[in-house]
Amino acid sequence: MIQALINNKWESINDNNLLLGTDTFSFGTGLYETFRTLEWKPIFLEPHLDRLFNSAKIINIKIHYSRSQILEMIQEVILNFKDPNQRVRILAVPENFIIYTSQLNLDPKIYEGVSALTVSANRETPDVKTTNYKVCLKAWEKANDSGCFESIFLDGDGVVLEGSRSNVFWIKDGKIITRENNVLPGITRQILILRSPFPISFGLLYQSNFSDIDELFITNSGSGVIPITKVNSEKIGTGGVGSITTELLRLYNQWLHENC
Ligand code: PDD
Image (cartoon, rainbow, N blue to C red):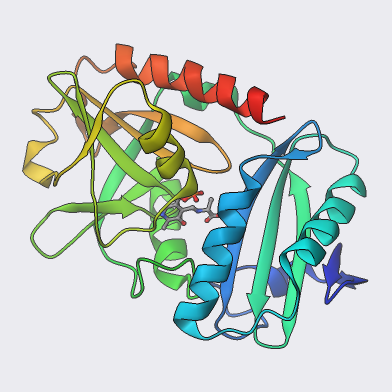
């Protein structure tokens, strides 16, 4: 059981009822947002709320709270939790607006490079972060079972879409590239596009080109920038974390602290 703020009231709820993509998830189709805290301060919260409200319009979910009410609720949930570094989740589902948090628990080893595998899959509504999460969960479990950190989705033509819980960037000849469409407009992706001192352009990466790129990394709000050094059985670049990814990791960490 965990404590969650449900429609602005504290309730004890079985964690299984909140597990996206499982048969135990006990709410209808809706939206979710995940963000982290640093020293009890929410990181890049405003763009998460922008995405939540925009997506609510797209899929026609009614959010019965104003932005300032939501900010107050979030603050209450964060301050009620013992750990300063948290992964906070908002669920906007029919009839219920739920906020809960848990320990962030990042493994520092991931920043030394992780492995990924590719799967042929896609999310039905890529622009929107919906609770229809079965495809993502299945792909992530497949990665986990193979000792990989993430699954990278490929479309029917073998072109990279996004990760099961991340956006994908690659670097070739000093240029950073990410996919423009048919992916979640990730908040971490957006922060990088706006702030990276190295220009980021849009493009496509074919599975057959993993061997030609120099660096690869994924982004999400929980873990930030995560270098990928191996895809399937193929080493990326030299097999270590490249210099541009290293600099972006350093900068992202700096931005997190500035946001506090
Ligand atoms: N997932 N693409 C998908 C399919 C995702 O699920 C996520 C995030 C991202 C990255 O978005 P952002 O930078 O806004 O976190 C891209 C979150 C972390 C989750 O599943 O909880």
